[in-house]
Length: 284
Image 1 (cartoon, rainbow, N blue to C red):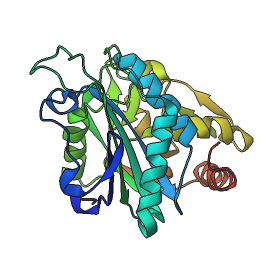
Image 2: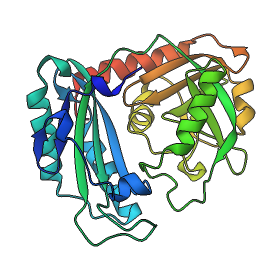
Image 3: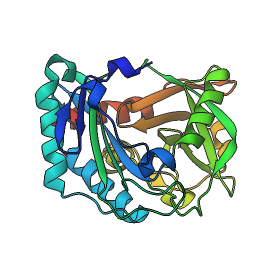
């Protein structure tokens, strides 16, 4: 589990700062009401993976939230500064870019000042060989004003993930308001049925994950792949299940609730393809 002490480099509104100076105002809307967006990237040997796609999604999320996105060159400069200051900590690391609407009143109304931009980096370890998932009783609101946006309002995810941990799982999976399989708290979900690979459509309110996007582009070379919606209980009959995220990549699932699963041929083929393609191009 990563803790605060693991965060080794901080860039806040224009400069690298020491940990004790890595602060934002207490009236920042990202703090008071979760009014912000963010991206998390995997860094390998000092190089961020799929940076261009992440910056495009950051801009889309900011636009969806009504926050003025900074110039892309500014964010790239901040990322470069953090990586330049990281040294050995960037051998395998998690890089987070956070953008908030800046200081505002103690309520939902925004202020008129500049946005806040923070970039942080922390070393991260490899995930286990597989994940255990737990379905939870709460749902994603597919009709929410922020559906599909990567916002800093993550309290729902924190509650769901804590429940998954209580149940002995490493990730929680949620349905949407119509009972369709949606996503995990920090991952997208893929299932295999009859040799075909499926993942929920964005209509469910799931995040348009970068790794999800790459799997949809790369997996058809090894398996028939479809974006198609299924009931949440498809997890009880799927032949194989895996989840994806920027830090996990393609991550096999060995158990969903009380149902054990084998890591099958489709998952193995997609994982191998992802590893080969992502190693060949760090900014696909």
